[in-house]
Length: 190
Image (cartoon, rainbow, N blue to C red; front, side):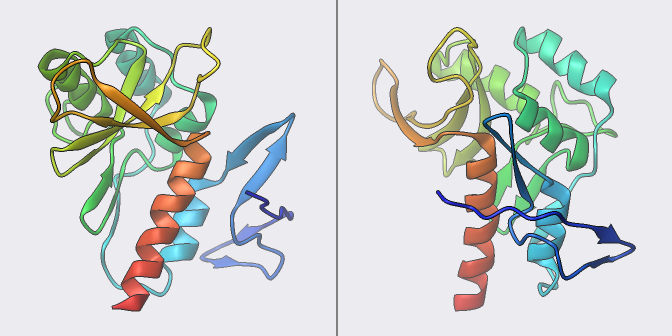
């Protein structure tokens, strides 16, 4: 994708006119996003349907990483720090909660990843970002030795083993942008 980047400013509750509609920056060959700003911009004209749990403290993030025995990508960590987790209509991007037990809370990346590791044999180098109607899960590869590090896959969990993986996005930034923008576009079509 060819996203334009511009400097942007957040002033009080308003974006200035130089705000880049995608909230994306390219730094050292990596994409980075201001997730909360993008969510606020896209939800500005919507009365409901968006849910944001709120930013997560670094100690909660490190605890989840320790329990899952992985290290989150920088972009997913930034999402957790800014948003925690989000709901968009019937979609929910798994994250972490400041006020709930992430070991057992539905919608927590910790509880959902542990659940799918146990129930369907999801390998330890993946985390679960979303569950789509109990047929597929969207996962992110976190093995930094793999050429697919940070890539988002759809995994068919209804078929017999072995699990089948289909690449969807090259990064969490692309996934998040598509999820949020797709929800906004769909809600305006109704």
